[in-house]
Image 1 (cartoon, helix red, strand yellow):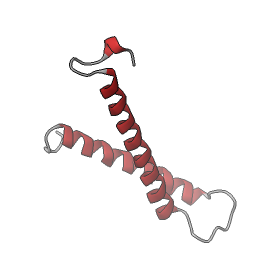
Image 2 (cartoon, one colour; image 1 turned 60 degrees about the horizontal axis):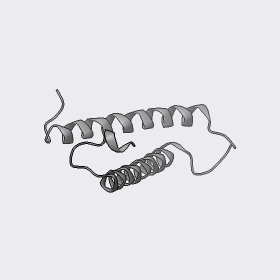
Image 3 (cartoon, one colour; image 1 turned 180 degrees about the horizontal axis):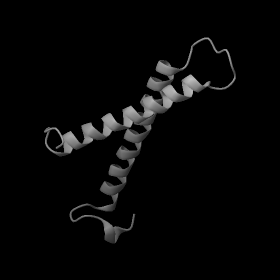
Image 4 (cartoon, one colour; image 1 turned 90 degrees about the horizontal axis):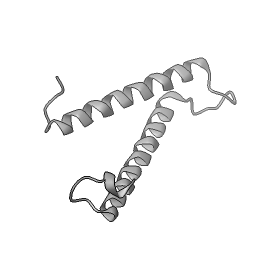
Length: 85
């Protein structure tokens, strides 16, 4: 991030701190998504070395719904808690 692209009132250290916080949030989000969808979709008694068609479909839908809900929550928080229009 170039210093001349920073918003007014934000110095380089603050920008790096914000970027670090954002990265931690994204890693936590990914880990929760992976754990949630794995627990929901993958049979605990591993019968095959690869995911079967049902597990693949379940994971695809789970991830899609997780991102949709995350996006809706982000929009609501950005709009001051009001539901998106």
